[in-house]
Length: 301
Length: 301
Image (cartoon, rainbow over all chains, first blue to last red; front, top):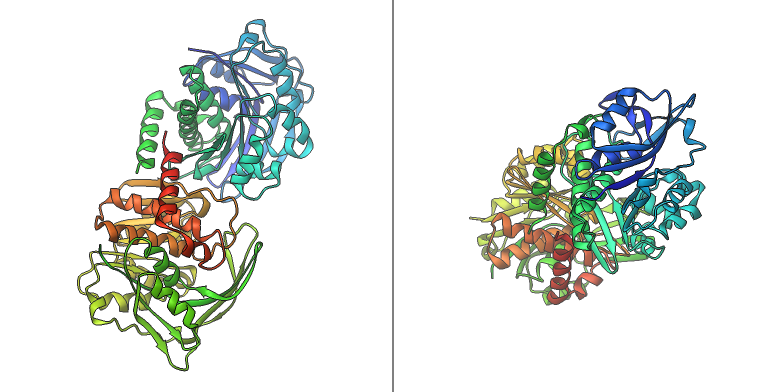
């Protein structure tokens, strides 16, 4: 069983969806990613919060087999807060307010034992922080990065700098189109492969995911969900579960990463069924394996 | 090898897409459906055109193993014409002009030997014409219907009357949402199953198709296409190929219909690669089987 190191945002989210609202709920890319990954493998979390970050959230992370030695708690600082809502189609978030807080000047300092990490998930955060984290890791075996529209818009070249140093890049379809300026998702995936990663994964929400490697494309169906309550964290859960599965098995062949992609979709389908981490944190390996088997059946012909 | 009877529109299309334009090109749901199906099985076409319908198109249909004894040619009548363009995302057609012509008062009269048809594809046409066709067929084994937004908007109950008499209903995702008033496609598919068909297939364009039967969902990937030139007829090709494959094999088990759905997607992926029937009519069973094998590989994990 290998550790998985995850760097990214730890946040307090206020969210409105057609199904309801939450205020200052536990959120952030690294939080979702770590919680999802911890279903499979032990996690080392790198991030930052202020001293306003509730103790119950710290306790929750600890309870999940997540090592928080890399989570800086800044005295007098404010935790990153995000406020937003979703259109009725639940595909696009509309940001109402972002308070960066301690996030603005975050310079990660990895604990000594984190620097031997072999499996690394650079979750959504400023690409310069992703690179600063990667610089401190001695000999990573498999590195996956995620990103978001914000960084593509304001730090496009930095996003590509990260791409040059990772094995797997994960984006959603809108981000892939934005980054490549290609409308066609097949062309977008193939164009991104040329920017460094040996694997590019494009998430398509309810339509599953496409994984590009060499000339090959793998099409992963999503697990069917009848009611999406809150899509926040779906992508982070996807990538966290994928990397957690690969770290657990220690097998980063293309064939095994395909299974990781399906696990990613399955865990994401759980995340969206309730607000914040409620549904994800209630998931068990048994419930996840049941959905994995259902997806296998759905895809067979 | 069984015959497949297809009723639907035969038309002349003028189309503009980002890739170019065509004027008065051969089109229509039954035309695309028959051409696609004829890759697999002999087709009996039921439709209507005016005497302005070019002889070369008649010759083309005859050359494809399509029996046109059921194609009425109305003296002094005008063939149905459609003019439209597509948004840059190529997902939605915008109609500029529709000239119904002989289509307006079409009352199908099936040749005697067509009435023994066992496999029937009710392609997109007024649902009352679909029913009038079905009424003349003695003992169909497997009936599939398609529809479109227009009929859902102006003849919703007639669409459901057709649903009560078919085995398979095929719709695209937008039509499924419109007909059920459900945003969620999984709920929409399950709701439609309750209206009669034992199988509901929801097409999602580049995202493939979902097939609902009982509690089961089958997720079929689409064949990846880097440049969509003209999406016209993709859905008709899909359903035509599906029914052609099933008629050819004479096996309408759920498992075999799944393979038919994949063939449908593969043939549709060919149709969209050029205007009108250019690309579809150049396809061979060999090229189709190659794409089928590629999709099998894409879906395996």
